[in-house]
Length: 96
Image (tube, rainbow, N blue to C red; front, side, top):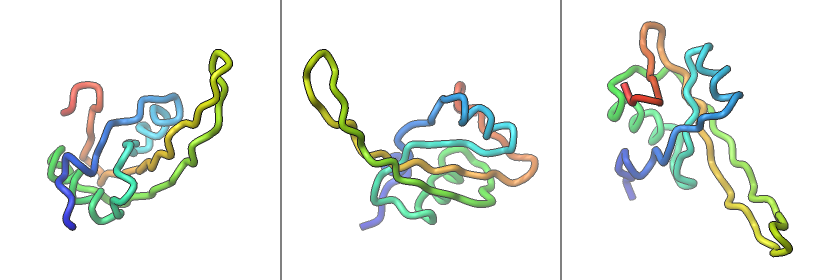
């Protein structure tokens, strides 16, 4: 089943590590768990009108946590580190 670009890219990741990666022309996104690197590349190129050089993915397993005495489990999240070609950029705070 082919995923729509809006179903592949869920949200940008705004963390200290993601901000440091943006200096190396990389953008970090939360992506769908069943999305492949090719799906992610096509979605980013379509949504942001940029040229993608490489895509690296990782899956962070959900952790067990206790909050106010209640046990719970965080979600398992798939992230994509998208490296852009020279001359292309994305400002995730404005979407340009």
